[in-house]
Length: 240
Ligand SMILES: Cc1cc2nc3c(=O)[nH]c(=O)nc-3n(C[C@H](O)[C@H](O)[C@H](O)COP(=O)(O)OP(=O)(O)OC[C@H]3O[C@@H](n4cnc5c(N)ncnc54)[C@H](O)[C@@H]3O)c2cc1C
Image: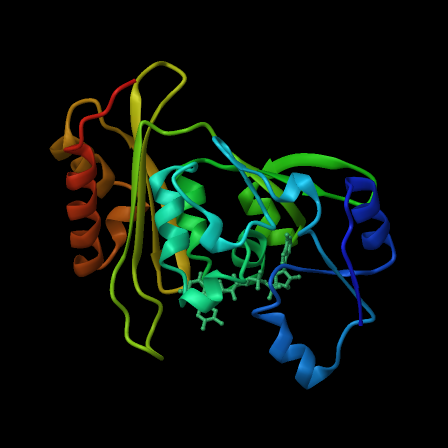
């Protein structure tokens, strides 16, 4: 297998055109390749500057999970810090987690930030939403968002070999009309539910409104975890 390390977008497009398979840290693909055979070419974006950014409002797809720190909102930094083991986080990347894994612990965090994705095609670079990236398995270059007023993430304890643990991500963002909205995403099993409600009237009203959304259809224990999470988040002081 030839591992290609493009240093520019145009070089990455050449690799794509020549059939190179994208990889991040290869933490998921390696075992399958050993069993089924290696592709002729793979491409890592680790030398491509656009895929390695970590800054306010931007996170590159080749960034390794354990490099994610408080330059990004708490919800995203905390999500990255709870993926797998230290060894996995030292190797696995944002792109591999969001596009390539089944658990996708970063996805609820990215959803509450309303993150947009910059993706690479053979002949263009363009922005799209996460749903399209996941459905079409686009080559992800980076994520972009507007920083929220506040945000938080919680992964409940899970049992080894058991079902995926419940994940609750939440963020308060100022909407276009200047009013604050609470955005919540919940990973329940392998499904991710997401919704948003106004929250200027306080946490009781926000929770009542949330009960009427898709999130309110969760079974009681999961709904209880969401309520608790939202109550704590909305009790924090926020500054505009
Ligand atoms: C022991 C263990 C525990 C784990 N626990 C968790 C957990 O708690 N939560 C969780 O969310 N995940 C967990 N994972 C999964 C982990 O997050 C993935 O291994 C990792 O995200 C894959 O990242 P990678 O960079 O190694 O991807 P790779 O293995 O390199 O690639 C995986 C797939 O993603 C595709 N891909 C890679 N980069 C891109 C890109 N930029 N654009 C488009 N497609 C791309 C590849 O083509 C491939 O199909 C665990 C994994 C292990 C081994």
